Length: 323
Image (cartoon, rainbow, N blue to C red; front, side, top):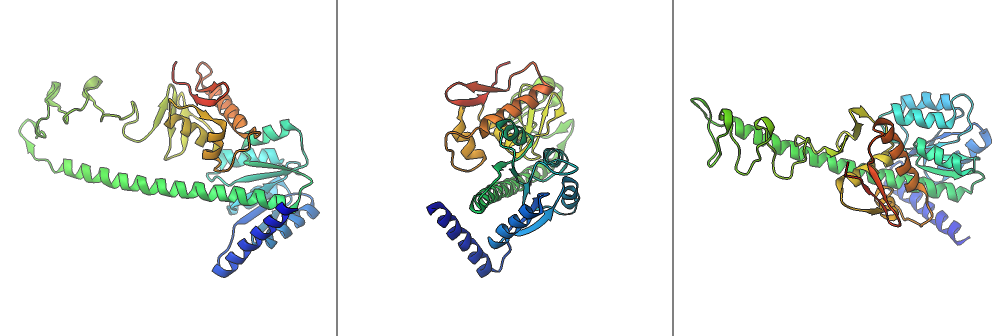
């Protein structure tokens, strides 16, 4: 009862802040074929200050999603036409945005929960449910999505700053004076075969190509992350294995990126959960294991002869670097 009172108090504060600021809270798409449950969810969410839209089948939801992007999707699994599982897979494979998906289903088997999370759902809540419980899950997912959006915006700003610096350096090099027989060298620049040169300390590579110290092999200065036959592009949020692109959920991508950015580090399940989901870890959540297992399965389908994620028993996971 104390938890229920706290949730109601928090929701009331959220609505009050929204009204005082004159702003609008998130729009949530409810996909539920039971009209009574659909209307109940609309009532719960509107009372908390959220905007809602309703769909009563997977096909209707897909038509809605092709016209507009909600901040959150609440989804039943047993739908007429396109099932909830099929809709999740379609969204993750064909749409370019990363809307959080909360599954609200009468299916209580562990296999159903694992399969749905593997397909790309972000959270799972079983029926019957309490209104306060739904609101807690909704607020948690929206908070994580907003935090991820801020990180993405900061990354884009940093990228633009870096691009401007690169452009400035290119303009400076283009201003070099041309002399007979080639381009003038910087002071102390060494001449190599064929008249090409280096900046001091630059390493000679095959064919006269070079890298700046610390630049990753094969990255070309673009910030790409590499491990064996796998390449991850943090900016484009793309992963390729043996030249084939992988379709990953946002959380799968972030787990893999974290491991690749720290190849020698062992991450506990608690650490991965807190950094990727940005929430508290309670010690019994199977979410991290499910996502890591799904990552391994998808990578192995493209490169079955290599191990990329190593389990460190009793601790967690790390990047498997050795071939």
